[in-house]
Image 1 (cartoon, rainbow, N blue to C red):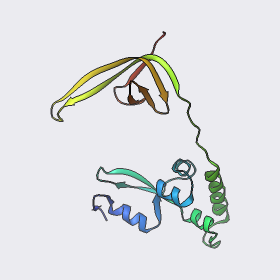
Image 2: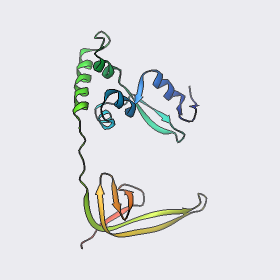
Image 3: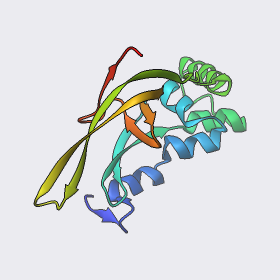
Length: 161
C-alpha cells in the first residue's frame, strides 16, 4: 500500500514494523549491541522510505536473535544451521568493538566550494585553506570547519612545510 504515514515514514515501513522488522538502531537497542555491529553482521531484509525527506532506511529481521536472547527459540521454526549462525553472529555482535581511526595531521591546501544565492540563481564561491588539516574517519577538520573527504568539490593537496 503506497503512501505516507504522518510525514514520518511510508505505509510500507509501518507494515514492516508491524511484521517485526526494525531499523538497525532500534534492533541494536533491543539486542544491546551497537548499530555498526548490526550493519556488519546482519543483512537487511528490505528497505523503506522514512522521514519527510524520503530517506532510504534498511530494515532487519531480528526475530531469531531476540528469541536467542530471551531463550525462547522454537527449534521447529528454524533450521539448525540458521540457529547456529544466528547464535554465532549474536556472539560476534556482543564482542564487536569498532576500530578507532587515529587522527592524522597533514600540512596542505584544501579547496572547497561554498554555495550562496538562491536555489534559482545559485552562486559558487571557491574557498581554500592552507595549513594543518586533521584527517579522521571520513572528514577533514581545519579552522573550525569540517568537510567530508569524498564530498563534492572538496580537494586536499598535501604540501611540504
